[in-house]
Length: 251
Image (tube, rainbow, N blue to C red; front, side, top):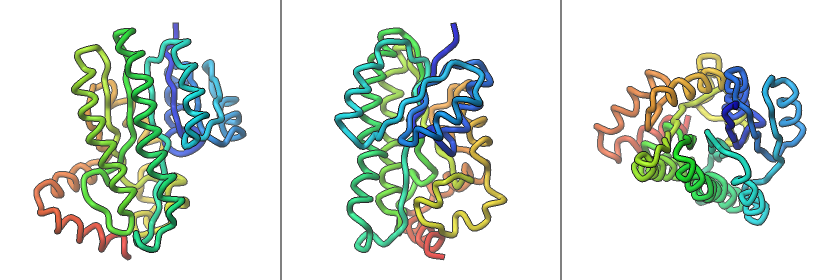
């Protein structure tokens, strides 16, 4: 029987690329996103059994209704990939957009982990991938809320892995850096994405994700430069890291 993976935010970017890679490895898939047409177009290109779920994860009632269906079939892998960012001074930012970001990046992810983890514990196996970012390792002026949401994802996921590992459930935090996806368009273009041709593709990150899962990594930081940057950030004073992030984002 084929293994079964559920991927949120699967209509584009890293989520879409993961769906392609996993399908090529023989996984059956459940693809979740708001944009049904894109999901259906993607599903037509995949060679394994694929279910499409059009769902706004910030709609709490709709999310809870879908969660009630999750116990019907085994879940071998759950990827919390849905999320977005925004670039602006905090006092000038749009509150509705920030509220939606917190709802998606934090609450929906946490709610889904709470729903899926007990199912995996009961079956004695499974893996959860929560997509954070290299932003999780430092404060980010001009993207203060986004960076903070990813810091939450990292801290929460590491703790969750510690709780679930003894039950045969592996939790991995994926921390990509700037990647060639639609993220920049939604967040607002800035210096991190100016050299787009030099950035890894979503497919690169997807392959790294699967490789990291196979190696049972708990925190997977994509790219040598990103790993080096995180190492340096951990050594320097937080105020210095914050000032550096501000200069990069302010260009």
